[in-house]
Image (cartoon, rainbow over all chains, first blue to last red; front, side, top):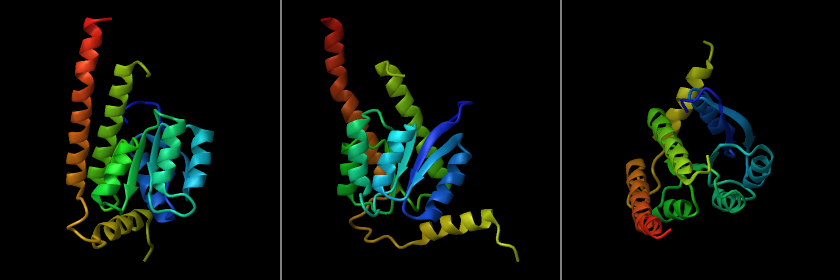
Length: 136
Length: 59
């Protein structure tokens, strides 16, 4: 997020105004939105087509929810960097998503500056892990 | 008066922040989620480090 090259990002949320908000936020962080999806099925199609570096994923969505989508993406692309962005914040849900490999879990009511900090920190952590594993 | 994009985004962010939490007793704050995430990461790296060190000793 400090690199010169834009970070290819997929936004997944069934609410268009949330996508607009996140699109605006991410554009200030060096991200380029390469695709958007309004449900999990579309998200999977877009992920396969675009291979984004960053995915922001809602949970409560029609057709295929965010948990099933996360599971499907990570099964197919184990290195996928996915951050959950949701209003569902039960301990069980957070743990389930972390177990499935979500890089972070953000509440939608998180102040925008804090959200940026969490996204940036997780991304740098992801890069460091990949570098250490020799997959970068 | 013209409704600007900046104003709209500020309104969306404020609306999200003002939504009542479903039940504070059963939900986690962002700070609690962060603490849980970092704790799990620390546990995970602690469990992989001894194995990695062992591998280095016995290639």
